[in-house]
Length: 266
Image (cartoon, rainbow, N blue to C red; front, side, top):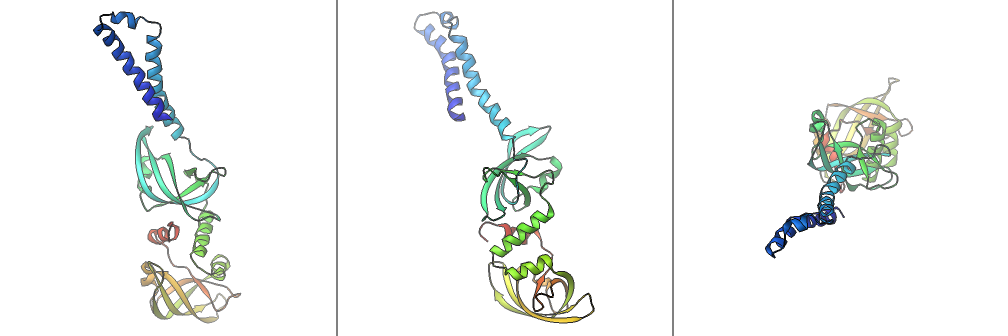
């Protein structure tokens, strides 16, 4: 629609420019055209159709979702629009959106970003989002901290379950007690999903009551986390007496791991 209006406005302006020349070429008077009652409205209409849609488009593009459902976005593409507000650039972002109860899906959003925060908005970065309850395709960047760490953690757990992590392991991760375990033995069982490896682990865990528990379990971890899980190393785990033969590993998670979790096709 904007393109149609701008094209129509351009035609009006070209007509206003060439009609006096054409009239003069035909032997008439150019001033007769210029003094016509329709000439000035033609110019005004042309300018209005050319410039007003562009101005309105910029204003409406600055409107963003300021409240809604918390979500997480994986940035796939970043481009500056050329618009600046108080010397702060407007960015157009293509993101993969992860929200509660849904599979990840692509979306676009625009936002004015402070110069000091531009480094955080690069392809591969994870950012908090707000999703419109009326239209899931409309998303906004949460620059006010409305998306809490708990929201992000819950989305992470849900996404991990979608990728095959058992329910009981997620319950341990969410409700178990954090302990330290010594890696007594580790046997690689080969690669599983892309970027992941399965291990047979023997862990020695000391509970808060001073008891020592030995757990034999198979775990799937990211290949980048493998150096942390070596024989003799001490790692953090989540342990629950309700599931004494299992643990959830509490390994540090970097940006690469988060990208794999929140990616659309992982």
